[in-house]
Image (cartoon, rainbow, N blue to C red; front, side, top):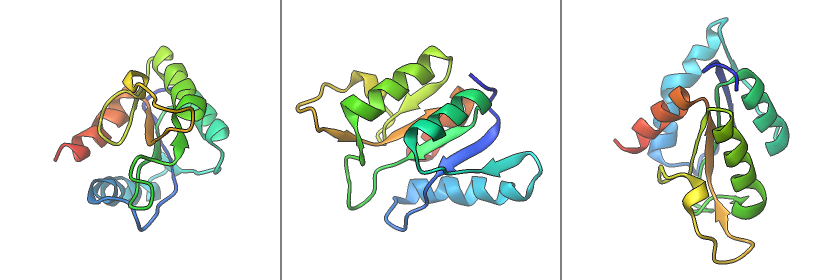
Length: 130
């Protein structure tokens, strides 16, 4: 996996929680720096691939309309979480737990996903915890 490079993939939505906006308020001003870029292709596969190669963090947090998250746990979240973790990164859901520990109830269960370099995900998790 890439370093903890300053890349982020996130679609900012007005429905996100305060913790997500706290991260955005702290991190997004860095985009003026030559060392930081913010990208969102809008395709989980493409954004995950970029995160694997370049490092950084991918955010698809839960929001008020999708309190469990919008990605399909079994088809989208878990495969990408497994790849990121096997590459030395970290993947969590909106409650700070590994998505690989969630026991699905149906094939269509949804979850949020935050994944990327361990360092960046731990910073994000710190905002979730207060």
